[in-house]
Image 1 (cartoon, one colour):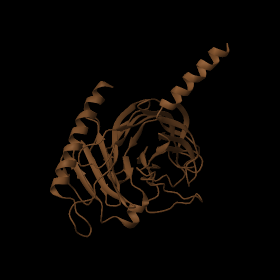
Image 2 (spheres, one colour):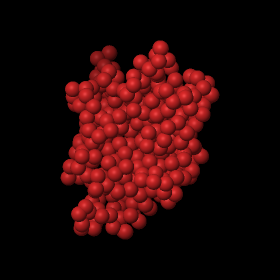
Image 3 (cartoon, one colour):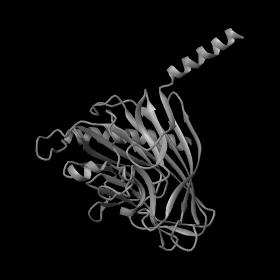
Image 4 (tube, helix red, strand yellow):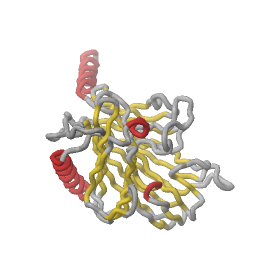
Length: 334
């Protein structure tokens, strides 16, 4: 019996030391809310944030030195902080739902997105998968707190090898899969700056580095105003931005054959894809996005602010195109 116990303990210890990835409940650092902390080799990679003091669930992403790359939106005192604090991490929402009276983007009238249940949170040798049931509710808007949308959100967080010119040992990959089921007849509406699935860089970018950011996207699309590009065939969009002394890129990939109308981008580091959709009660809209967040080279051209060179644009475009091909093949297999 003693020998069996020793053997079992040895196997457990071996498994623990081999498991590079971990996910565990943890408070949201330096801001309200709780969540799930995702780490690799003991270093923070991401944090799924929700709970008391948060209007919506979202995903934080960390850099190579453990610095926060995404916008917290709220300070330790629970008060909104920075420019457009309703933009938080990697998130999703629509400004107009069900005739226009509910705003599940700003969420400033009393609406709420509430995590009902964490269905699973598992770490493997290749990454972490989190599955959450989320309720989009009217909250304090109207006569009662009614359900608008039931969402099942699956986040798969992993690392993939780097590419020449990326100046990194690997990229953080986030697969964002969501299933939105309407609890009543409603409209996902609004406009491209206030709806869809988006990434928002840390508020430091908005306060210090707006002239230093740059974007690449595919296809070229049709420009329809500042930060508004039209296309029904969006593949990807890439943001280049600094945090402290380090440079990073964030790329969002849009799955083929899913709704998309416009690309929204801003120089303060917020971007995402938008579409409008009418849903009948019980109808489900499934969406797949992939994000790559990676250390990057600084812009090569010496100027103020520094400019990205032609060679860098070509290299980064080729990397994104190849990553999009891999994502497209992955989506087909799902």
